[in-house]
Length: 374
Length: 119
Image 1 (tube, rainbow over the protein chains, first blue to last red):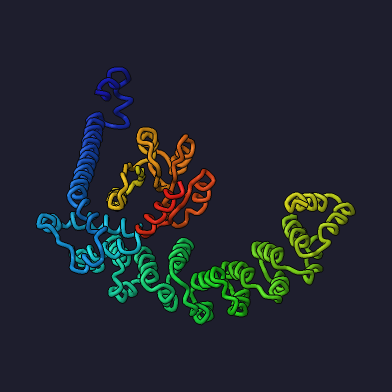
Image 2 (image 1 turned 180 degrees about the horizontal axis):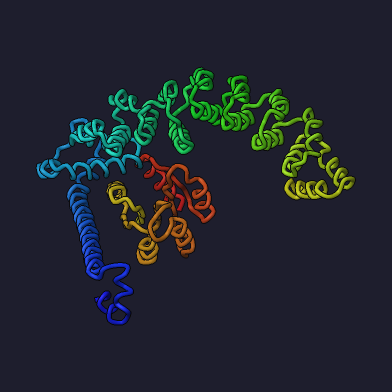
């Protein structure tokens, strides 16, 4: 034993000054016991996972062929309902088995459209799995509830829309996200009415997912009607998301409302407003951005210069020339690029300036020349 | 006519197999890229239908291998939404067609028939 060895090789009195040997022995025994408990937990966990894996495999093997046949059945046969073998009804009495089947149906529903997709939905309903998903909506556990929401909207259970909609402003982020995606999945752009009331932030990632979900729906032309209201939302993330909608769906009619967003106190809103204005620009937009420039912080000033390089005209030439002497080389560079893009003789003017002033100006000119390939 | 189907989702693979068998094709199935490359050598299919994201080897590798074979092998790629850049890469490798998920099985069959007619 280590403490005994220690005592034999060293001065025993020196060691026992800090700790009594019997306590050290107890400590080591406790550590060993903990170690054994951890090993036992790991082993148990692996055993349960292995058991679940083989159980799932067994269920899949039993049901796969029948489910596949049902999915590929002709529509007129499906109307009469599927004939469910007795043994499947027995299997589906078990909670875990029902969940396994739902997971498989949801996974394949996501990949198919048309008659096969309809058959999957009929199968889901006929096997009584809808009730299983609905029960999850009453769960207090967020992961169970959000899974229930996902199963219902993937399976096009539009009659559950009201229950799902109630969760679009849930205090749990994951439930909220799933419910928001769900209402859009079920109703398309109409589902965006949750933006009227949502008080929690819509994260960047959620905005991306919502936009992706909207891509699958046909735009119904009512969007422009709602945008002004959403741009006045007290929830800044709603404003940012609305600006992205205006950008993605090129809502030219809301140009003036987007311009107002340039005065928003939140910088993220102003940044997005600049980007959106590039997409829905009219003849006045470049000058509006140039006039707004002085009111902005550095980041958005760069955005404005990028915007002007895309939509600017010769009217902004003097504004840009003024920026070529800015103390920041980054601003000089951006202004130079915008100037070259907007002004017909921009490159020649930059070249002259580079020759006359040398230093950073010459480097800027050469950089722009290389980038534009002129 | 032999068609090799490569898809890692078991139920989806089974569904594709049964659908294509219903249409009169001989279907060889596998669920990963490595097995697909081996089966392409041993079975010499006329066509390969492959997912892009696969275990062990991506769909791109399968396309490359198919196009390097002496006999022409038509390739249809199954891609998820958001994989546009990968689809571009697939076409550069020589893929003949692609279909995005979620897709209609009947549409897939129409594309298969059209490609096999061309070949």
